Length: 255
Image (cartoon, rainbow, N blue to C red):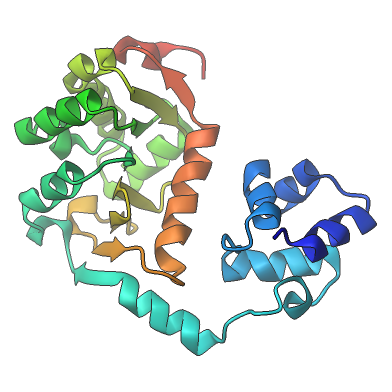
C-alpha cells in the first residue's frame, strides 16, 4: 500500500517528485520508492528533511516511526566488525566478500590501487561476470578538483591522479567483460565502499591520512537497520552522477 500521506503532502504544495528530490539531494527514483514501497522508508535524516520541506510532522508522514533506541539497536546489529586500520584487514576479506555476491557487486573508490593488483580479485570479477552478476566500478576522475584535494590532503599531490590512471590500466582487461561497467566520479569521497549484496566494507577517509591507515567498517544489512542503507544510498548517488567510460583511455575525455 502506497504512502498516500506523503504523496498528498507533495501534491498539496504543488511540487513534483523531481523538485522534492533536488531539494533533498536524492534521486527522483528514491522519492518514488518512498511513496510506492512503504517498506523502503527514508533514513532518519531524510525523514526530518522531508517533513520540514512539506511542512508536516514526521509522525504524520510515517506514523509507525521507530524510537531512537530501536534505530540504535538495529545499527549495532549491522556492524559485524570495526577495524582500526585497513592495513590490519586480511586481504582475503575483500575477495571472500565478493566471491559470495550473486546480485550486487560495487567498488566505489578514488583509485583503490591495491585491489587492482590482486589476481584473485580479477579472477572473481571474471567469474561473476560469467555468472551474470552486474559489476560496477566507480573511480575518481583523475583531473577533478576532488581528486586533487584528496591528493593534497594525503600529502601525495598529483600522485593521486596517477594512481587512478594506473588503476584503470590494470583493470583494462575487465572492460571487455559482459555486465562490467566503469564510471568516473568527481565527488568528495568520505568513504571508499566495497559492496557485495547485503555486506560491505566501508573504508573511511581521514584528513592527512592515507586510506590504508583509516578505519574500516564491516557491515551487514539486517531488517530494520539503517546504517547499511545509508552507505548504499551514497553509492547510488555517486553512480548516478558519474560518467561512463568504455576503455581506460577515456579518462582523458571531456570533464
